[in-house]
Length: 116
Image (cartoon, rainbow, N blue to C red; front, top):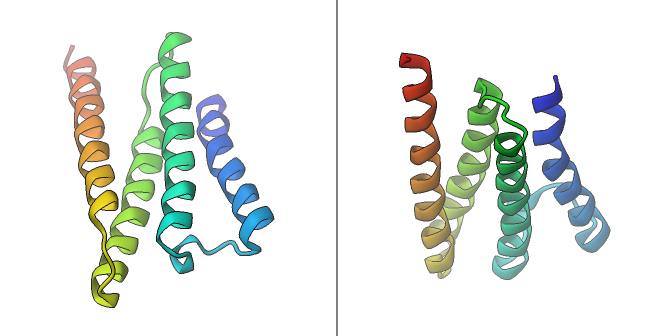
């Protein structure tokens, strides 16, 4: 339960900021720079919570991978929408590649812990 609360904090903070600044809860409808700002806050908050769990010597759970998957899925949806509208999506592609690499690193660590 503690892990779920820790991972939910960045999502809640991002959504509160989204509502305060843009008066919407739908990040997919945002323009490019506004979405990137929201997405980076969400990502940095999630990975800060992940490093905080590592600092507290907690194990990485399945909830962590669900949160990472949903954040990645949000980026993919926005990428597809941007491509369909003919907008430049270069920064989002770079962020998604970096996110995929970091997630694979954590998954390999998670698998290695489960094998032991």
